[in-house]
Image (cartoon, rainbow, N blue to C red; front, top):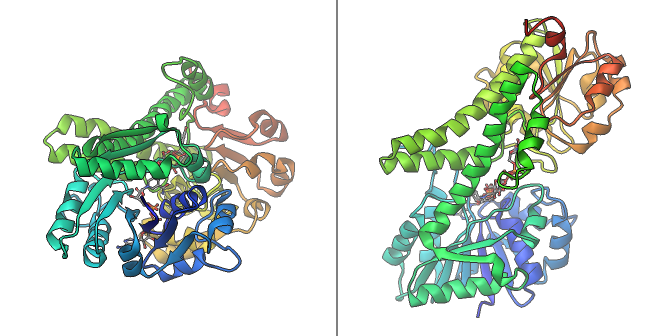
Length: 473
Ligand code: NAD
Ligand code: UGA
């Protein structure tokens, strides 16, 4: 019987996942621990100014915090008391050494495992929730066994998380499936049943898949690779559409109605962002290389290469449309988050579009409904080599209308709903002429914009100007 759960890592996964477990399992006390004091303070803030924005998250935290949900920096105490411990720490791409730029950096996983070994007394179920390379559970088990005292007994399970940001609470409450991998031993299977018991409070048994540990770890990487691959595939089609006059929206609809293909994840865009797709595909690529499977590695590497190409292609189209120079031209970037309904900007394609335009000397003005100025500056400075240039050319605006004032162009990089209902006549009147609209998300009413007078350039659609001037002759 599980009565106390500890979650190490109070981030995008640990926070929402623990909140939903606390909501659905009132008899279980859930403590989320993190060594980041500021983050924990924000989770505990009196006015519920939580460290991450997710629709409905605040309602769940309001209901459970102080009842059976706690946020704390007391890692040792929480580990000691818990029957079951989730490891939800970050697993970023390595930036140095062996596997640099591809392999997952497992130092946070290892430090969490060592903390568990140090502070645990008595048997514990340890659950790897972070996304990890296949066989990471074996390393965790070895660290635990080699460092534990008092003959402690640990069972290490894999339980990857499939939530998407912006819909985290919905995904957690109604998951397509929960995946649990564990050792095929009696104790291992007992631990699997304990974790199933937690989820069965709200997920039907038929939606809980149990596998061996390595299948579970690989399935997480595979799921993200397949999703990212679909986006790269439709983005590859968008390039053909722009060169031929086919429309990527029509192509996506036409192929998506084949029930074997299905309609989801066929939205062409300026490229996928987010903390995980690129990281996890590269992690898979590295794994294939280590396993001496170079053809398989090259196959998956193309998914990331296509994404980089799409971002560059979109920036190049902006520059080419603006008469091959953007130097000193004001360009408004609408949307900086990697998708709507989140303030997360990690690996957002907006960062790279800003970088390309700043490299060309454009005056870039960013507006995003949720992202704060400090995040925009931090991210752009991470990719631009010249901080003085960024300081001079990048500004962040409080609203869309001031961002576009006196601009040559606006560029939609994130599909925020509020962008669809902007007063485009007012925007047109305040911009320099000719006024350009670039839709990197295919969300605007292009005919309406053209009627107002904009030159409109859309991902996956040939430029009307170029078609009219005999592009196909
Ligand atoms: P995050 O960076 O938001 O949060 C991780 C937290 O762990 C940080 O607050 C960090 O301070 C803390 N931490 C690291 N080491 C620690 C330690 N030893 N002790 C205590 N705290 C420690 O990361 P995230 O976005 O929540 O992702 C976590 C994992 O889940 C990653 O492996 C990621 O790939 C995976 N994942 C993420 C998402 C997502 O939508 N973000 C979805 C599915 C899976
Ligand atoms: C993704 C997966 O969807 C989750 O299942 C997974 O748990 C998570 O990664 C993870 O492991 O971190 P997330 O990155 O939060 O979730 O968001 P997605 O909705 O998948 O979007 C990722 C990126 O792809 C965004 O930039 C989005 O705009 C883009 N995208 C998505 C497209 O360009 N086209 C599409 O059709 C769908």
